[in-house]
Image (cartoon, rainbow over all chains, first blue to last red):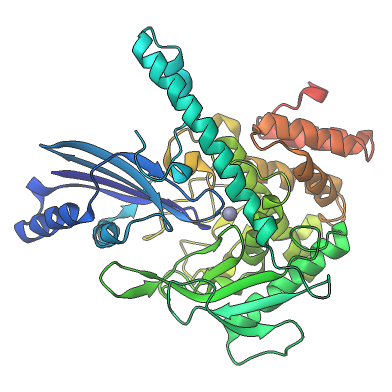
Length: 100
Length: 357
Ligand SMILES: [Zn+2]
């Protein structure tokens, strides 16, 4: 299973992200990631944004597995409760994105 | 493509446009159906965006009226009321900073532009401090952000490692409140170049509130946004540098390197950040600083006036060159020299205003 993640926006606007492949992670981390993906309930692609808000952070999550791929974008206010533990995990693994 | 709440689901228009040109009749038919759905969705969004004006609490005095709430380290807005207009300082510095900076922003718009609050009609300024975020496991973590939710401002305390209290910075508070002003005026679409202009105007009036409050003249003013929200480190000076976009932080272990372009030739064309709204704002930001320095005196008196008049006149969907054209027209109303200076400032960042092309 492969999980690509980008956090962008917020008033600060600095992007962070990671690209994780469970086959190359230590076994315990791979199990945790797969379990968090399963319990996140993310099964359909889409963009879910709060129209009236400004400076919320955005979370792009791209899941690829044998079952297919799912690409979702949420903001701080639309991120489902069930997906928050996954986003916390991905944030801990994220590094600055963009220009060196 | 979108299977949840249609109001919050945005099909990027360029994708629909591409599908409409498809050779495949079925794809075209689906794209047309999408357009109809999108039109319905836009109508719903328009209603949602009109809601703040209907729900805006009006000041009882029709003048400056602030209400400050404390989320008490929860993720619920607005929280508990802790300071109202007319009450003196409290023990909590975050409350006093948010209160004072909202007051300075109100006074700035009132004095410089004769604008009575965000809606121009004495709307109460509502803010919440000590907001945190849930990690989904019943725990709360510090919020490294400040935002405008469509009705009120909200401020996190920062993690104490990279970020400090977001209320510390007058230009950040002015930035958030200017998102509020825009909600009631141009309401620029929050994606692509329109969104970058929305961010740009928030930075312009955020920085001008501070320069006005501190009496900083354009030639010697500080153009950094959010200096006070960062824990000091040699790799970061602020969250944005309006004069030199792309230099606010460099190889920072957490923030990385400032992604803002200073010229159209470096326009960000990716998907993140609603199509780079906090990234591409660097281009108009630099145009503003160049114009403000060329026009001289206090940036809020001349350049600020031109940019304020421009902000009120832009359509919801607007590209940089369209903004530049309105901006040059507003400047020309002050004289040919001002028009030329503003046109040159935009040209310097690679944006041509047709009025002078
Ligand atoms: Zn903003």
